[in-house]
Image 1 (cartoon, rainbow, N blue to C red):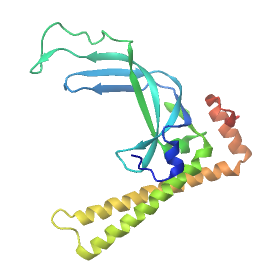
Image 2: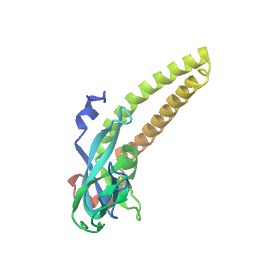
Image 3: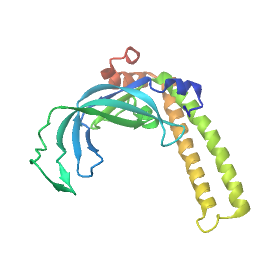
Image 4: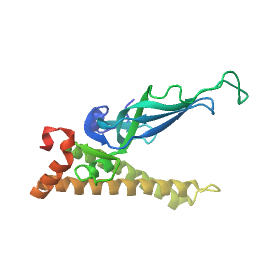
Length: 223
């Protein structure tokens, strides 16, 4: 079931909203049900789609993710008995170069937008998020801020009426968590609004900067 209440952003989940250019390989280690088993893989380089995804571990939050093709570097699936290797010795490079499951490169909406067009040299990636979606993201975060403020107010009222919340100080903890969410959302909105302001001005300097730093996307909107 969808948890995002902003219909615009909800409709964008799973859709491509930008690009990411991977300039340095991304490494990943996959672990398995047997603690000793693992598979190491490395991504390819190039330009990949960035899609909007809902974070189910953080209700109502959103982030961007790219699926990077990968190859195996080493793995270990030795037959074990009580943690002791049995049978034929396992060569960890037996599958080197074979295709591996894609590596998910995750990036926050805020980081991606702030780095659009101004990613400094030396970073392992460049990123572009289409400016037409920035306002939709801000609408989403403002809706979440409204809910966070109401939750913080209710936590504050409970704290004022009943104190810390007993031995485990549950009321105190809840109020602290709620206030942290308000702080996080206000900062996100403030920085997104500032970046959107630069885009809205469409000054010659900003146009040149955006054009120079996003030509790799091959997107007509950057030219």
